[in-house]
Image 1 (cartoon, rainbow, N blue to C red):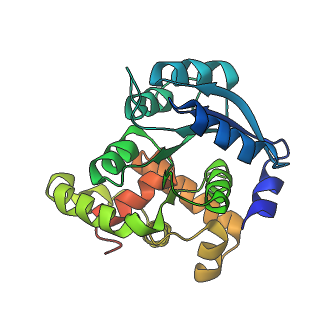
Image 2: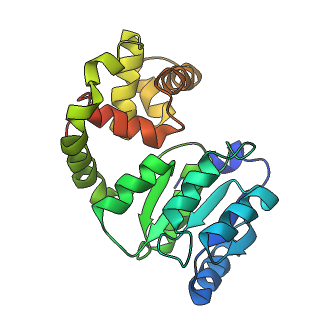
Length: 230
């Protein structure tokens, strides 16, 4: 558990917005989160449009986003949040009962930073919130490799992969590959014999050059371009 590390990065509690059309689900999440010293629930929404509005008003750090909701769904809401001025810091963690590849593809493309199934345990959910709030990517381990592999197979022909990486230095390519394997900045630093701060700088430069919103998109790019293979 990275609670201590994440808490250090967040002097204030992690602000969480709950989005689900089922009241019992929201209540369960709220009960789980409110006992944590480093997490604060700042709002609830029952539809995608409400989620976007609440994100503008409450300015959460993390949005726990359901996918299937009446009206605007979670994918559309994620896309709007990710592209709204002033909400660049907001990270969306998608929660769903549907272990369906299409949802993961669409969620990542829309700007989601993480993806977990609703039947994940409480510890896994709390860990996910802290990881995403700290700027890391989070994909449910039991679906990540299969999803990314299929994503890659379907998209590789469209990507002109090698051309896309020409903007990176050799060290940035190394860093991108390590991000793709799920390594944190500390782990990347240890692997490359540099400080975590230097690793973080390389990651930031790589995101900027590739136009990636966050580490989740770097993971996808690493697989798409063949730097990491399933």
